Amino acid sequence: MGATSGQGRQAGGTPRAALADLLAGNRRFVSGQPVHGHDVTAAAAASGDQQPYAVVLGCIDSRVPLEAIFDQTFGAICVIRTGGHVLDRAVCGSIEYVVGQLGVPLVMVLGHERCGAVQATVEALRMGQRPGGSLAHLVDEIAPAVTEAGIDDPAVLPLAIRRHVRRTVRTLRQDDLLAGPVAAGRVAVVGGLYDLATGEVALLDPG
Ligand SMILES: [Zn+2]
Image (cartoon, rainbow, N blue to C red; front, side):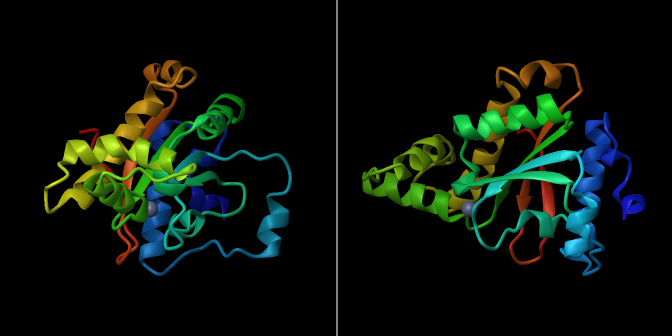
């Protein structure tokens, strides 16, 4: 379905074209008219060299399957998922690889409503109990957004979710290997929010 995938699929495509393609895929999904089935013939068709046009960093939440909500076929986008789309060196290194080695012009950070990782951070901060294990890393990384949103604000969850997306976007824009391409306009890092009920992705302004 190359014709419906747009020019963002071509090597050296622009961030703008890539974003348009990604959002067009979400509109197909929302309208109930996806064109990309996940069948083995599509896998085989994409089995040569990969030329993805975007990388999406999202949450592990089972309700947010990224290839599906953007109606993307095999070979189209790289996907990274962590709890609350929290960054670590492996995540940043993976994005650096996709941008630097595969020439991908677009990075999207996608948060979602009612995120359990952000909710868990709200509860941890309210109770003053930092979780053990590596879960502490997630809470530590999300905590600044919760604090900024206001721990006692009744709307802290939706506010913190948005702030956390924007913080993640800012961190990636300042990444050692991404800052140059971003400043030159060759790569864009954008934030989005997924609505669990409607399936819609809305872009978040930088804030
Ligand atoms: Zn989540």
